[in-house]
Image (cartoon, rainbow, N blue to C red; front, side):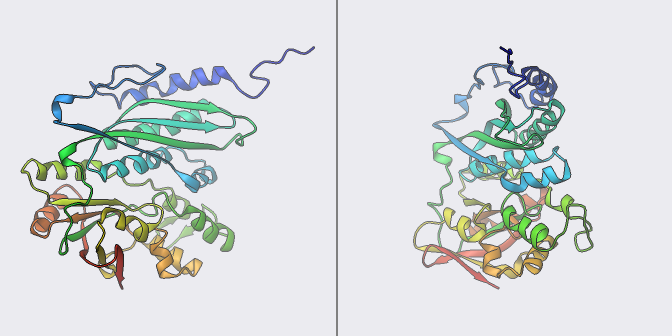
Length: 350
């Protein structure tokens, strides 16, 4: 009888060993003094500085990248896609006012190619550096038969911390509060099933098609990573809270469901967001999507971020200071509307 090895079944454990060696330096640059374990431990240990908080509350978030991964496959470009995974998790926990502590990743593929996976994990590490989170663990799974050899999936899990008294949950929101938006880098990581259908299936474009309106190829535009908003926004929240000021009352990460689903999540019952769409500058990619797909305007705002990746509810007395702080830290904030009484939801004014 023939002797069958694990490698004969499609799983190369030696490729796994090589992958770990290749990613060590990438992972270790995310470490800080709170990380107590090295790469390869069964569990990642992270020491929480309890003295920094009166009542520390852990905040967690998990997500993936979705079918944006197929753009990376088409382009054979894998050195940015991990940032999307980190962003989708850490931006979510930021909405509760939390500071990211650590991140774990999961990469599954049909055939493990060490250099390929090292590029992916390197981009995850880049995202963690931008978020100030330590990449303390992860899993790389080789699953022949479930994934094609040149394809993979990524998921991530982030944990952050916020003092209980500083949790942002919208409870102080009131009519007259101002909505401030922070620009996105483009489509981010949502709506790509529609994006792919419009550009590749219906209009027969390719990732290499140069689009004059974009000033680049379609692929280079679509692969732009999701923005990570941690550093300017978390520091600003702390800036106000150190003065015991509730200037920032709500935060909304604009992901799947666009404005219509996500903005109401930070608003209490009895209030709604009045948004003046004319104040928002959309990147050309959104105009192209709408035009080439003949997409209804409300569908656009129910699917995409349309140029705004994060929305803040700000006390009207601190709007000028908020705008100044964000501008001084490299942001281009947009006053996009205000809170008013009404059924919980949003009212778009075009």
